[in-house]
Amino acid sequence: MARGAISADECFVGYVPPTGIVSSPSRSICVDEVARWVRACRDRSIVGCTYQSMEEEGPKAVRLSPHALGFDGLRWHIRAYCHERMIFRDFAIGRLGIQIVEEGDSHVDPREDVGWTTLVEVVLVPHPKLGRLQREAVARDYGMSSDRHVLTCQKAMLFYTLRHLNLESLSVSERAAEQHVIVENVEQVKRWMEEDRAGIQGL
Image (tube, one colour):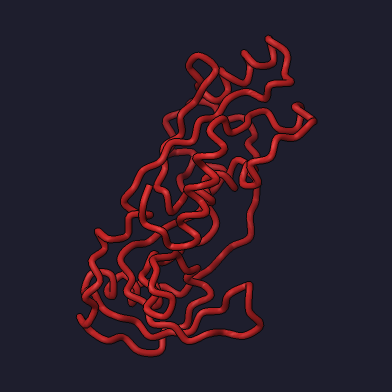
């Protein structure tokens, strides 16, 4: 109701108190553009396009074999094989400009994208500097069992998952009141993120 998705008449709740929702920038993308990417995934096409990376000043021409869509909570991404770098990686749709679609020419097997098909587990635990009652409160808040919560996600979506929790740096803050949970299996998680960035396909 607060987002305007349904009206008060459609809501089964008898009373709805005033509600606030955190705002975020609207990352609008062209519907026709998304439809072309979806068709390219379905038809196993190679897409010639430009991509504006944040690591380079200007856009770069790339040829992609897309096979999946990803959503990081704010933006939609295309998961694709990059023929220039010869690795699977994700590309923000809003930074892509389609130039030509080579219908049904891709011989890339999406099953080879182990970063996409592999599930990994992030182990969350209360910050060690919290007191006993504080740790119990955090455990309830995160639905922990024995002070641990195992969060499962695709290896390719690991960075975005951690960013949602403000844990992407994997560092432990000295101020426990500002960082209620930490990642327990840091070395594993760090290795998985490095592997996906480099396009390494193993576990």
